Image (cartoon, rainbow, N blue to C red):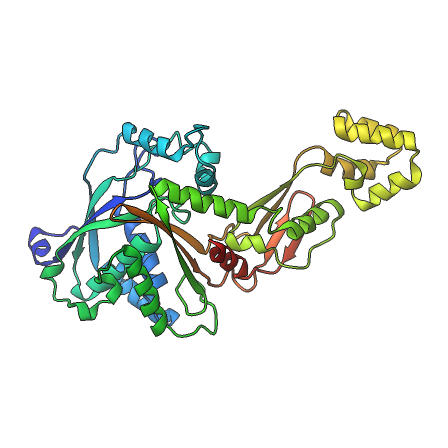
Length: 443
């Protein structure tokens, strides 16, 4: 519905200027030619963060009613409109500068930590072939309110998006972080500071103070959770925050630092060795793990890759025992050579005396890299986004990271975690939040 000039004049307007701190990977009308910050996408993010941080102690039904009043729904339109204006040119020259800052000075490759956080973009080669919004790019966002009663709710949602979230792909891993550098129109509103949370207007020596103030103020008024929420929402006992401040030179140094810590923590040889062994045993011997797989708490799906067996001891127990009990030493030596050379496996297995079913089982695990995928057990739930958010902040040319955990119901109660490939499938229980808390604690 088009707004007339007369109606527009009567409406309250707030103008916000933002600056991107990390690249924002946002597609435009042509995904590869330019990036476009769109009002519909921004409104969706504000809705998400209002629900996560501003719906306080409302029950699910009350929250839905209030959310539709602010952001619109099937029965009513949104109580505000958004208009977005780019304030500078997002040139290829600026993109190249971002690439240089992402790269290691010696290897000239993208830094390992950044590569790990942005792995899906890097893996698909989108990061160097796709236009994106560069760091320091500025936009003006106009909020035009039809209902003044909801202004402070939208302001709180915008603050939450600025300080805990991001815009575009990989925003939960630090991409698309931005800061508000100017806001106009607040003085024209009939809203006093006493009506707003302190963290929205208090200024101290640095931005981190306001985030800590938010945490202290918010946690004190939120009830201790008895049941997990079914959506991302701050709750007493299921929310954790940590600020990483180590005199970083720029936002890419923060990303690389957090990315390397994240990569090292998730290394199966360090913190998940038993888990990896259990999955490998399931893959080779079909011995089904009984404990939850902790790593899946960071989000689904996850691909686990294992090298094919290279010697007799790595084979399934049934086949290994057959070889040890029925083959001569000479045949065992020949068999090991086959495993290492990996040529004409099926033909040679037949010559060694294996039957059709044994050869079929051997071919499953010998012909290629072995993969297991962990994902929700029901088809309607193909993925589960990470409950951990990485945000990069900047205050007076100093850069810092904000890591938050919003633990809610991981999946519906009747959905488990399926571990499967073409010839194995097993369902295990959902994970808990402990592994993510452990990671945040070591940062």
